[in-house]
Image 1 (cartoon, rainbow, N blue to C red):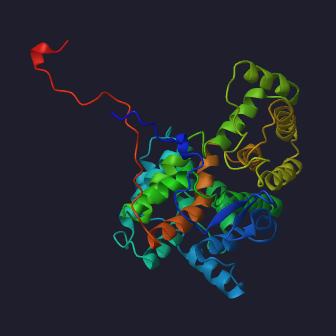
Image 2 (cartoon, helix red, strand yellow):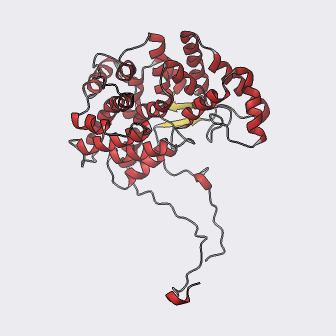
Image 3 (cartoon, one colour):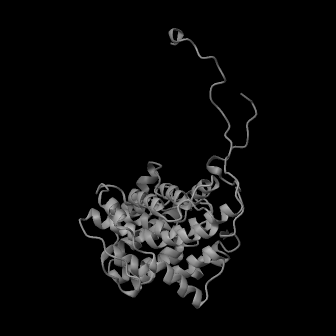
Length: 378
């Protein structure tokens, strides 16, 4: 075993693995950009469908292109009777992320272009996944409640239809707008864990459904996509604003992890947080319940004062989704419904200039040795 110690970057911290034109955090403005546009500007001025088009095509659509994109997405929303039957057979206590991971695998087996990994076929499959994932999420969720699935409505926008298939109704426009904003903010974020997982799978020559299934598995983890669920569980555990700071002090005393804070990329705060916080506050006004946002305000202020750590996007997204009426286990599947756009953009980019992703490791185990006879083993 060599005595030479390589420069090991645990978690690949600081390692530049490839080039990408999809998104970037601009240090000079601390802004996350999609194809050069600041995400906070996209959230205020564009719909989720426009942003999906941008991520996949590099430019924002004109009116005709947007109409065509929306028509195509709306026409692909239905899922097969076979998938509905599979969803009904899922254990009712299964996590929705496990349900959507399995549903995407099934969609891959059903897809008419399953074996075609060409860019045109991948783009068509990406559209089908964008359209069908909300339907599958909602069907699995409703099945756990003993409710029949709701057929998607092609006349509704993507955000409106998500509420329709989950709840059977569309809420007021302020709620839909807040949800649409969250989808835009969650759509893409560089070489995060799930996106890098999807690119790694793609680098083997695997198809889009395989890459997305792997991405979903990575996203489920509480250190990645599952953090928005953990935030809401945290707030529910605290219960009242008056208990927030003392609860946080207790975490400090035990050096425990506090979910929803910190980010490896942002040094001066997550640029998506102000926008999501503003819309979470609007949700609190609409619902008439300020408890969660007041708790969040106190926790964020105390964390910044004591540890100089800023909240990340999951921190305001958790209470926002709760105020919209979504059950906590649905928070991360919503992330999937949004991030399929970023994953697909990266899968297309990886495949266009591919090389198998295969890093090395520095071996620290036992040196090569002989296999002893059975009777000589201790």
